[in-house]
Every structure is written in structure tokens, then in C-alpha cells.
Length: 466
Image (tube, rainbow, N blue to C red):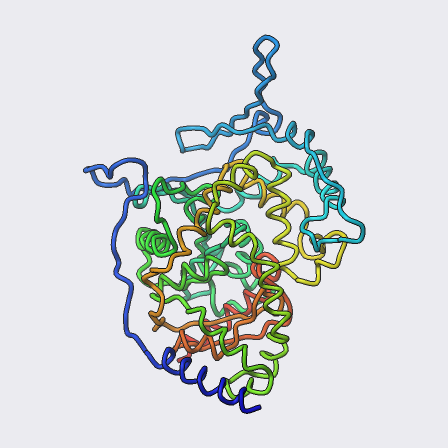
């Protein structure tokens, strides 16, 4: 008992020392060049160009080039409109047909990773039923654009309201994805924000939504240079919004998107707050935890085991992303297993106990495979993983700087780790909305678009009534 009190006092002092430092600092708005070679002396082309996702028979079926008795080399070509070039890709169907799988252990379900028995179903659907052309049409239902910023071709979708209530102007909202996601995660929430009245929500707030692709993900060009981190991404997205004519706007993000949005507001949370977990239930209320916080955070052993179990990818991608990238960029089935396993366990950790990983309880195979195809057809899995290495540095300049803009937080119960309101407030002093969501996990906009849209509407309403 006395040992716990002493520990509580020491850790309490440490926490107070860090939290009480209310730094009024901001990140310097610098400049950069991430394109190939040396930055040209001529000014950058700031035009915004329409873009369209395209596909072809060659992309799916391949172009066979034979030479004597040598093995055929299967290549495919994806044409990207307005890009002026094309990307050479591997033939999808032939690689799926040649997959080699290892049988799963008996009764292993998803505890060893993606269960290869269920993977056979995914492969069969992908090979025989999945209609990529139809999904490309779906991707193009929102307007796509590209523009050059700091040497990189930045892709984004820009969706304006179909109609506005009399006297209203739309509120600009930047929404940023994470890994292993994409702009496609926002397709279901966009109508709830741009056309809320026709989707069962109040039209008190109507949004104009911009969803960019992080450089190195999907259709946004990857950096040619080392050091491209979340701060550089935040600066580029800020420049994008300025280029679109927005001086003030709302931002929302999860996963890397949350860090990028935080950088845009000049803050990144520190990891030391997990120290208070060591105090256990007895001192939970002392540190401002609610009953719901303690339900979501304990037991300590379970939390640490879960983090250990779910963070193997993090260590790989933060140290040697190119090594695993070679395998994933070469095998569509390997890529699908690697990505879709996250959409199982990060949606609900209890899905590990299911033979199918619970994937189709929250998502359709069409939606899941569309996400995989955005990595496969663009060949960007390796560049997306490099983002981890670039951000895992000991000298991160943005740490310790608090956000001094109004902020809202949605706590989804199946997220990998729960973040109590107390922790959020210590780094975001102007937190005005903290919501315990009734259900949902890591991919909130993709999994529970209506819940997240309602919370966004709630936050904006609270802010504008202040």
C-alpha cells in the first residue's frame, strides 16, 4: 500500500512537471523540396489539374512478352489521365493464380495473423468476382485533382455540397487518412457531411470536404529524399488548402492523419502519459479517470500484451520498411493478407477469435479489396511504410508543443489503446468535445461513418456557439 502511495506521488510530480509546461510555441512554417534531384530555379507550377482514376484490360490481364524458351515476363500498364506517363505493373491474375499458402494451425483462427483458410475465400472472390472496373467507376464519383507542392504531385478529392440552405456557406473540412488506409475510407462519410439533410442529419452545418492522399500513398507522389515526415506532410497539406483558397478550415484525422492534423495545429502528444497506467484501479480517479476510462484501460497486463501483439508491423516499418516492402510489392496475395489483417484486429480485437477475422461483419470484400488495389496498382506499399521510419526519430521537433486551437476527440471503444479525456486535455488545452463512442474501432470513418459524422457536427456546433 505505502509503496503504491510513494509511486503515485513520484509519478504525479513527474506528470505535473510535464503537463504544467504550457508552451506557447508553434512549429516554424518552413519550405522543402522532396522531388527528384535539385530544386529547379524556376517557380513551381501551382496549377490544379483534374485527375481521373483509370484502368485497362492490360492492368488486370497482363501483356505477355515471350522470347524463345525463356519464361514469359508478364507486365501490365495502367494509364493515368493528365499524368503524362504510365506505371509498369505486374500482372494481377497470374500472380494470384500462382499463390503458395501455408495451411493454418488447427483452431488458430486469427491469432497467428491472417488465417489462410479464409484467405482462400478472399483470393477466390478477388480472382473471379471482384469487378475492378466497377470500383474504378465508384472511385471517380467524386472529383479528383492533382497539384505540385514542394516537388511532389499531390492527389486529392474535393467534394462540394450539391445544395446549400439559404444564406449558408459550406465549411471547409480537410480529412486525412492513415496507414494502411487511403482517401477511399471517407467515401461513405462524405455525403453525411456535404448533404446532411438528405442523409438523416441536420443541415445546420454543411461541409465542403477535401481528402488528400499522403505523399507515397496511392496517387500522391512519394518523396525522393529521406526525412519526409508528418511535419512536412502537414506543411504540404496546409499549402494545399491555401492554394484552394481557404485561410481558415476544419481538420480531422485518424492514425497518421491525427498526427498530421496535430502538426498543422503545432502539437504532438507525448508518450509519457502511459505512466499513470501503472497506478492501477486504486488511483484511477485520483488522476481524473472516469469509470468508462478504467473499463477501457484495464487490466494493465492485458493492455501491454495487446500492444505487444499488435505492434510487430510498427517495429518492422520503423526500421527496415524496404525489406518487407519487396515482398509485399511483389505479391498481391501477401499484400492483401498484410493489409486486411489490420482491418480485422484493429476494428475489434475480439475478431481474432473468429475463423474469418470478422472482416465481413463491418466491411464488404469489394470495399476492402478496393483499398488493397489502391496500393497494388500504384505500387506504393513500400513508400507508405517508409513514413514510419521517417517519423520514428528521437529528435522530433514538434513534441512538447501544445495545441492552442479548439479541438474535439472521439474515443472509439475498440481502438488499439484508449486515450482518456485527462490525457487529451493535458496536450490540447482547448478541448471542447470528448465523446465516448458506443461502438467502433480504428477505421472510424470507414466503419462507423454516421457516428463520426454526428460527432463532427456536434463539435462544430459547440465551437460556433462559443
